[in-house]
Amino acid sequence: MYSILLTEDDPVTAMMAEDLLKARGCSVRWAETGWETRTCLDQAGYDALIMDLGLPDADGFELLRELSFQHPNLPILVMTALDDAASAIKALRNGATDYLTKPVAPDVLFDGLSAAIQHKAEVRTVQEDERQRQRYSDLGQLASSFAHEVRNPLASIRTLCELLNQDLQPGPQLECVERLQKLALRIESLMKVFLDFSRPSVPSPRLIDVRAMAYRSVESLEARLRPFGAGPVLAFPSEGLTVYADEVQTVSILVALLENALDAVKDPARIRIEASSGSTHRGQAFTSIRVCDDGPGIPAHLLPKIFSPFFSTKPKGTGIGLAIAHRLALENHGSLVATSIPQQETSFLLSLPREAPRAQGAVDGR
Image (cartoon, rainbow, N blue to C red; front, side, top):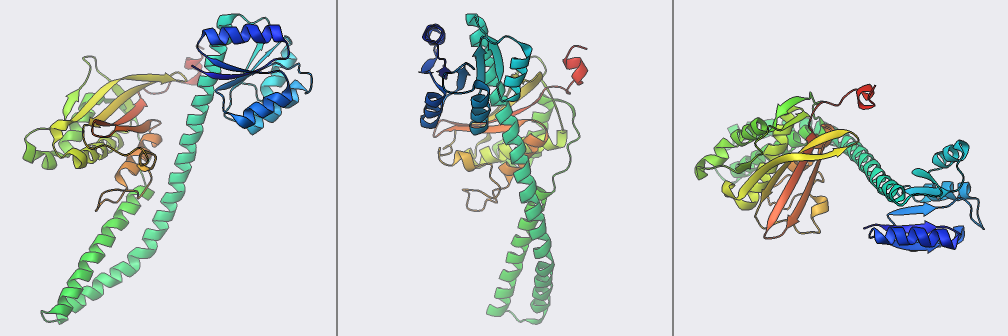
């Protein structure tokens, strides 16, 4: 289940903790000293560190501060005989994820371990989302500046082409000018794409019925679906599901996902939209909306890149649709992830808050 590094200088305590963790399916590496702990962390990765503060070769608090700085994503549970509040506060300030006093009951140790690992995972997710938002913001500013600089000379080129078009007689020169006009229009459309990415509107969230949102997304593609006489397969539970998000933006996300699936399979009957109650993080419940198809799939080495702006494997793709969808999901306090098994199924999972966040006092029960 988990890979655990256990730092404990008392062999009896270490063996008891090791047996307990192994009985719960964990793999355990035992380190008796601070030096051995550092060596283990340099050589391998662990899901969590359980450490005592009383070590023969190191000050436990100093070691805790050092390790939490060097391995910021590693959950560290302090398990010690020091049961005073001052030691607990000092340990937490030096980077401990949790503080347990000996003797520790088996359920308390394992529950604390699981909670610490989950907490660190949630913190990493929040931090990565914030870094991604900042990257999008920086790239958006760059795209906006680039588009502004290009549009003015582009307008001059189009004007000159129109003047030449009026003066030239039919022939090779006129054909060249007409080609220039088409290229200028293509560049202008790309500038619009850049600006759409660089200036997303601020979300105006409200409670939305998921089924109605899905139908609206399908209706937006009516012209593309009309030749097939059918649309994607919709699968929703009998109870109504909601999301708390900007309706226009969430519809835009689903439309982008549906268009991507249509590009892959052509036939809309091979596309499925599912909705279900999602997970709960930090007291916030989420609704999951999945768009999947049975097309050729996405190679594993390309999956990490598909939400990158301007990345595309399509001959005429701009690489902006999925990037905007991913950004809008983050802006609405949700997430968008993709999985793919080539020739079997490609799935995009959109998770959005199920309801408006409660005030902190309500969350705390006050």
